[in-house]
Image (tube, rainbow, N blue to C red):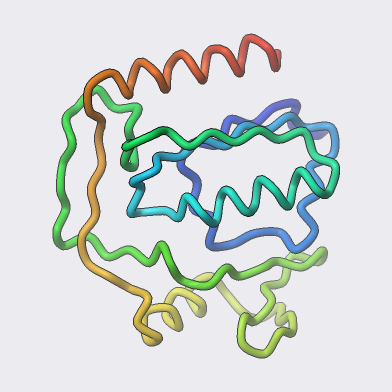
Length: 153
């Protein structure tokens, strides 16, 4: 049976379904504007792709928010964190195989690790990231989540 609802919180959009049909599932994607672990732009684009495929999706970008802004802890810096938020999106075909971003062909033997290693070799891997919340961001997150679940269930 399909999921009825999904509340996707600062998801990593580096892998996306080529045909993003979510059926009757209601989806909400939330991410911080300043997220440097995941790409807000990738998720904004993916929400639009789902919408164009007929999916019931909503998207919210929280202003000045970083990754894990739902935490009631102050903003923390992780200078040694290795992240690749600007690496190319890798698509997954209808059979579950990754589509090589360079060749444009699907390869059922490719793995997530293959594309992460490529991203690192191509210079997309960077050091330094942050997470946590400021001011009332955790409260705004909570209110958004509760509103979504109240309407979805």
